[in-house]
Length: 90
Image (cartoon, rainbow, N blue to C red; front, side):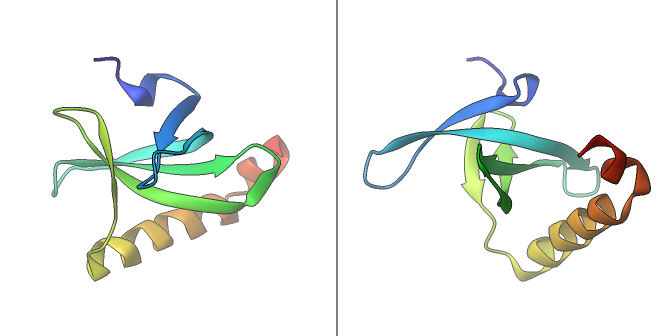
């Protein structure tokens, strides 16, 4: 199975079987949890970024439900947004 983190886009299938292409804004790894996270968005809707975790064993995407994980990914995303280098890229 192809690793979705090596691409800049990923195909997501929702619970209703509807497929949509999502762009990968960036990824990071939490070494303590041994988990990868990705921030996804639809092209044309860059203001609506969705954080997900990546199961590295089967490359499946999982919704983040744990409160501590959600707080962490929000903090990482805010740091990303506050980085002056990121503002230059946009």
